Image 1 (spheres, rainbow, N blue to C red):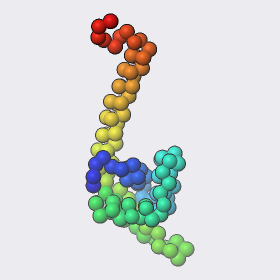
Image 2: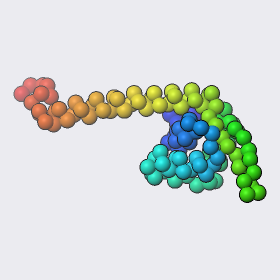
Image 3: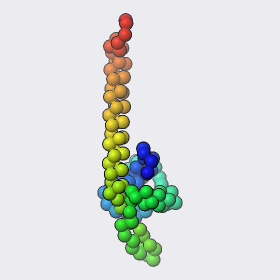
Image 4: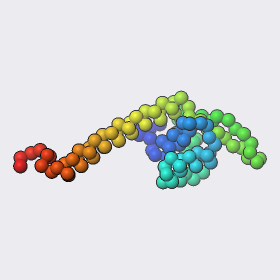
Length: 119
């Protein structure tokens, strides 16, 4: 799987980190995790789940029949867990670096004479 992870992939893996879920539950969880910014369509989700399964990041947990229809539950695999952990750490480091730069910028904007150089 390519890194960095695309946001939909990251959010699907994040949704599955807590417990196995079926497709429509994943769609709802991704919407909640993204505060509604990302609305996965069923075709997009199931294509992504197929790719994530092929990549070994997600596994089929179980299948059950509900109202005459097959419902598949997916879970995060050990590889998926490791990938999500590594991506979360990468993002955390990026956020820390950006936050430090923004704090330094705010200090320079508030105190322009402290920017260094010859004045």
